Each structure stands twice: as structure tokens, then as C-alpha cells.
Amino acid sequence: GITAAKIAKMEKVGEHGVRFTFKRPDRELPLILGLMPVLPEHATDAAGFDKSTLKPMVGSGPYTVSNVRPGESITLKRNPNYWARNLPSKKGFDNFDQIRINYFRDDNAMFEAFRKGLIDVRIEGNPTRWTEEYNFPALREGHVVRETFKTGLPSGMLGFVMNTRRKVFHDRTVREALAGLFDFEWANRNIYDSAYERTRSYFGGSFLSSHGIPASPAEEALLAPFPNAVAPAIMAGTWSPPESDGSGYDRAFLKKGYDLLRKAGYSIQDHRMVDAEGNPLQFEILIDGNNGKAAAMVWQRTLAKIGVDATIRSVDAAQYQQRVTTYDFDVIVQSYPSSLSPGTEQVGRWGSASRNVNGTYNFAGVANPAIDALISDFLQARSEGQFTTAVRAFDRALLSGFYVVPLYHQPAQWVARWKRIRHPERTSLYGFQLPTWWHAQ
Image 1 (cartoon, helix red, strand yellow):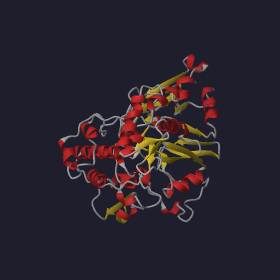
Image 2 (image 1 turned 60 degrees about the vertical axis):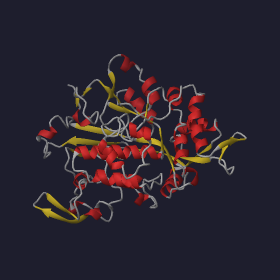
Image 3 (image 1 turned 135 degrees about the vertical axis):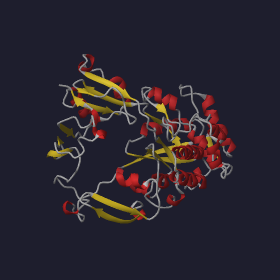
Image 4 (image 1 turned 90 degrees about the vertical axis):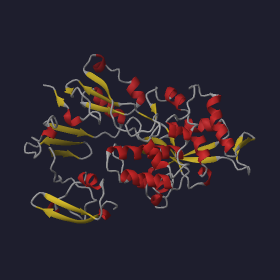
């Protein structure tokens, strides 16, 4: 892999140490290696490593596997000899003597189990259920608590990805027009119970976001070699996705997209949006089963009002994976999670080197010198200020490319718990942290 190729050699140091020697300096590589377990050779079957097994694994964490019921549950027991239990950084962690993880095939069944008290904690992801179905007796009587946790983490980006390998999406102005025609206000009100917030940045909600912040002189210096890489409104920090009045019939909202398509050489003929040669503006939205279908139908509905023909094709998981791996699609729904330490994974998502390599996350087919340079800038940053500057400039360049139609995200984490389970009063940067919770006696 990419990470292994950066390592010159690995050596055993003492009884419990491993030394990695890098081929060249790399700011992020120690962090990546720190996330990887070092597996003992005597307990690792390299030849059969990819095969499932019920044999307990060798580990060094605070819990050991005490019971496995295949397809039903895994029970963990606290390890009294855990090597790090008394370290200051572990104070307040690992408070349960036993943790049982139950498996459910159906989310409705899992919710019913929580209502009955068979499950202590439920992390909710369904906005309709969160707003309408948490009204059962145990909650009304105070035995169940429903809470939201704000984090300092980036929102990431969920959106429709336009494959710029397709001719229909070569023109950035066309992509901007289409990206501005998702009626979030109508969808949030009528489908999602007003539970979501619109995503306006790949790092929204964090200090790395460029939204609402004018580019600093340092950002302008990084972007100077690429004068057309960032749209003026995004450079000024004044850009947001177009907003509608939520009625579903906002003509001013539609006109913004229509005017951009006119600028790109399109016009309406016989109720269809066509280019100068009479070719209709049409494309297919590929979805995995029903995942993303509701949002796709909202976008399709709005596009149809100005003559753009977007069809929705649902395929099974195997066919979807094959088509996505070979970039055989016009548009897909994709989530790009973000962290406070973006790094080499961005090369696989947006770098020119990954555009023509099957199986990468460069679904949009991006090959943009400005984006390549900005990725290199934050990978080589040597201070927090340099890093933040480069990532914000990178965010602006991605937004200005209009490769993705920004959709929405949860404004906070939604968690319900039985009152017997308690947690610290202060919320961490990462939101709720289950290892710091405990069972009240």
C-alpha cells in the first residue's frame, strides 16, 4: 500500500518496541502508523488473515472477549491487568465491568429492544424517528433521556458527485448550475422533519472551514499561482448554496440555475434544456438499492422544472460496487468524512494521480493543479497556522470546482440512554465518548 511504500525498514527494539525508519520525512506518517496495531507473529496466521474465525484474538486493550454468540452478541470483560489502566490519560475511561454488543438485522427491532430496556444506549441516525418516535412511556416517565451532543469535528461532505470524466460535466458553470438546484429547504421541511443543516464546506463546523471567512493574505499567497481556482464569492467568504423559500415553487431559486445554464450556452426548446447543437442536458443518478433515493428524487424534481432530464437507476450492491470502481456512472451519492487532520487520503479523493486509477475515491475525476498543490501544502505544513491556511484554501478550491452537490448533515449527535447510564457533564471535542460513561449504582 501507499503507507508501506514509505517505510524503509522495521526493527524490533527490546521486548515491547518496534522502530520504523522512513524513506523520507513525512509529517503525517507517524500518526498513521500509530493507528495501526502491531500483531505478534506467533499468534498471526498471515496466510489466512483475510478469513473469518471465532478464535479470540490477541489484544492489548482494556477489555478481553469473554463470550461470543455468532450472529447474536459479543461480550467483553474488563481486564484487571490492563497495562494502561493507571495512566493519567486513561483516568475516567473504561468504567464498565462488562460490555455486551448485540447484533440486530433490522433497525426497527433494535429500536423496540431499546424501548423495552434490553439495550442501554441508542445512537440515532434517523431524523424522523428522532423527532417523532421518542414519545414512549419510559421516556415520558423520565426513565429514558434523549440528548444531543455538539462536537468540534468537521461535518464532512455528503452530496451528489458529478463525474467530470463525462462530457456533460466538463463545464464548471454547468456543474455550478446543477449544484445550485437541490432544494434543501423544501426537502428538509417535507422529508427530514427539519432535522438537518445544509452543508456549506468540506470541513463545516470546524476551524478548518472556509465558510463565512474571507481568505487571509496567507491563503491568497498560496492561491496566487492559480488565479481562476477559487470563485470570487468563495474567496470573500460570502458564498452559500442557493436557498429557496421552501415552497417547492420558488421561481427566483430556479432562475439562478437557469441563468447559469444560459451562460454556459444552454437554452430551453420544447420544454427541454439543450446545448447549442440541440443535445439535451441529461444524466443518470446511480444509487445503491434505495440509499439516497429520497434526495435524488428531490433533485430530479427540481431539475425537471427547467427541462433538465435526470433519471434515477437503482442497482444491487455488487453491480453498484463494480460500476463505481470503474467510474461507470454519471452521478452517485457519496459521503466524504473529514477529520481535524486531513492528510494523504485527500490524494486518493481529489489528486490528479488518482483520476485514471480504478478503485480510488476520486469519483469526480478531479485533475486540478491548484488542488494538487494545496494538498502538498498542508501535507508539508510545519505549524498549525500553515496547516489551517492550506486546508482552508483547499476547501475553497474544492467548493469552487462544484464537483459535488452539497446536501446536509446532522447538526449534533443524537443519543438516547436509559437513566441508569450516566456520562460526564462536559462534552469532548469528539462529542459523546462511550468509554467515559458508567452505570449508576
